[in-house]
Length: 120
Image (cartoon, rainbow, N blue to C red; front, side, top):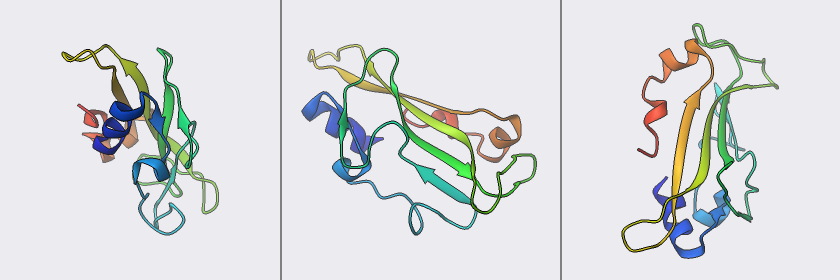
């Protein structure tokens, strides 16, 4: 999230993974159990943020992990998202970016109980 904050402070836009210097884990943004997706912000592009925000990262699992359901070997189920929105101006008057991380399935929350703390 620090990379995204730095990019946003310079450009007032959200940056794709390539622009902010982020590399997803694994080979081709996939590990044995998870797939990572840049979602609504293209890897090499910038995106303006509004109150509705943009999903900047999704993580999905291929197989069931305890009670967190997966979609199979080639079709991950994306239960975890990080949404970026434009936040109120900071003390120096510059706009800031806010992050909302959430898991949409109770079984996935149990596996990653602090996921919703990302960016806070």
